[in-house]
Image (cartoon, rainbow, N blue to C red):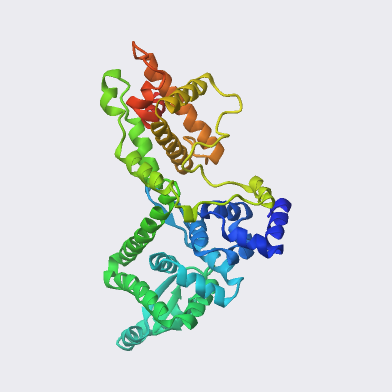
Length: 410
C-alpha cells in the first residue's frame, strides 16, 4: 500500500459520515479503490462494503483468464486470500458475507480448496479394505490437513488456503448450519464423482468443478454486464470476428452491420444506463475528490471526456467531427454510438493488447477511438461519394468501423 492510498484510507475511516458516503459509492468505483489498495490490504474497506460492492470486488479480483480457455476461471488462491481478509473483521462479519454470497460462487470457491468426503462412507470403505489398504489410507489422511464437520471429512487440496477456509466454514456453520450442510453436500457430490471415476477420477472431478464454476461465472458475467463490462469470451469472440472482416468494399454492406455480440452487450448497457429517480447518483462531496488519483473502473457506458490522445491524431479529429455532426442530426443515434464506443473500449480492456500486455482504462478508450477512426478513413476512402459527414455512422456504426480498422492493421 502506498503512502497516498494509506492517507486516503485513513480519511475514509476517520469520519462516520464519510463511511456512509463510501457505502454509497457505485460498486465499480468501490472496486477501483480496492484494486489500488490491493485486496490483501483492503480488510478495513471490505468490512464496510455493501453486498453489491463486495460482489463487484469479487467479480474483478477472483477471476483470471484460463490458459487455453476462452472463459475466465476462478482462482483458488485469490478466494483463499479473500477469506483471510474477511476474517480480519471477525467471525460474525465473515458469516454475514458468506450468507450474502451467491451459493454457486461459494461452492465453486470451496471446491477449489477442499475434497469433501462422507464420514460414514469413508469408515465403511476402510472397514471393508484389506489391512494394507486401510493402513495406507490412514497414512494418507495423517499426511493431509483434514477436519470432520457436519458428517463430512474435509481434506485440503492445498495447504496455503486451509486455515482461512476452515475458519470461515466454522463461522458460517455457527450462524447457519443448514446452509453449511447444503453447501458441503454439493461439494461432496463433486468429490464423489471422482471416487466413482476410478482411472479417470481426476478428470471427472475437474469436469464437475468446471460445471459449478460455470454457474458462478454466468452469474458474475450477468452482474458485470449490467455495469458495462464485457465478458472475456465475448471480447475474444468479437475481436476474432473483427479479424475476419473482409477488406473488399463490395462486401461491407453486409459484413459491417451490427453483430450479435455487440447487439447483446449494448442492449445490457442501454438498459443499465437509465437509473430510476430513486437510484440517481447524488453529487460526491469535495473530500471524495482525493480518491480520483487512486484509480477509476473500466470505461463504462459513455465515452470518457479524457479519451482523446495526448496529441490527437488527424483520424480521431475526423471521427469526433463526424460524431458531433451526428449529434446535431440525430441525438438518439449519437447516444447509441457513444454506448458502442464504451463497449469497444471495454472489449480492449478485457482482451488486453495484441502483445499480451493489459490495457488501462484511458489507454483502452484512446485505442478504441483510434482504431474506429482508422476504420472510418478506410471506409470513406473507398466511397466515391462522401455524403454527409455522419453518413458512415448511420450506415455501419462505430462497431462496424472498429472491425474494419482492426482488420486493416498489420
